[in-house]
Amino acid sequence: MEVQAKRRPAADYIERVQVDITPNMRGILVDWLVEVAEEYKLVSDTLYLTVSYIDRFLSANSLNRQKLQLLGVSAMLIASKYEEISPPNVEDFCYITDNTYMKQELVKMESDILNILKFEMGNPTAKTFIRLFVRSGQEDKKYPALSLDFMGSYLTELSLLEYSCVRFLPSVVAASAVFVARLTLNPDSNPWVCTSSMPSRVLLLHYYLF
Image (cartoon, rainbow, N blue to C red; front, side, top):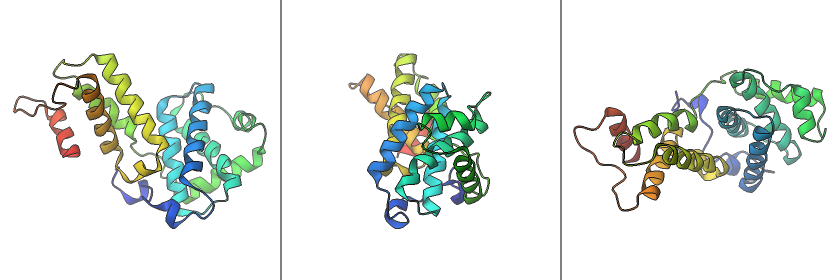
């Protein structure tokens, strides 16, 4: 699913599609959305899906910078409905913007996002793969489970802020995060030891990285 064009943002959409939005603006928006997710205690999958929706929408539609925050909260509203058991309501997202936007504006932007993305809302994110890859990275018992999990997740979350990471598949981002996490936690050891006894899940990481 992750390689399907309909689920992938364009790698150069800011240069090719946008005229009023910069990579720095995108980074500021994502950073703020992290705080929103923490405020409403949203699961991390909601944040990853939100950023995916934003990048995919901006890949197909030029947007004025004054509506970038509106896009962000509307994308998070949709992602919350997709991932959360008890998602925040529209009024909550209006409140978090200091009522900069009215309920009708959020609902209209929500509709625009759904139409632009053709209601293809389910797609794998780096969070989908980091769970699998962290487990695989612990197969040899050389790394503390929690340390590898936290470090890998931290590095993967940092990638959300970077526009330059948009061009990479989510699985590649996740595999690279586990590689760097293992190297950071044990710099004197080869992050991957490819032997015939290694589980197929770990060998899969070699495919993505090399």
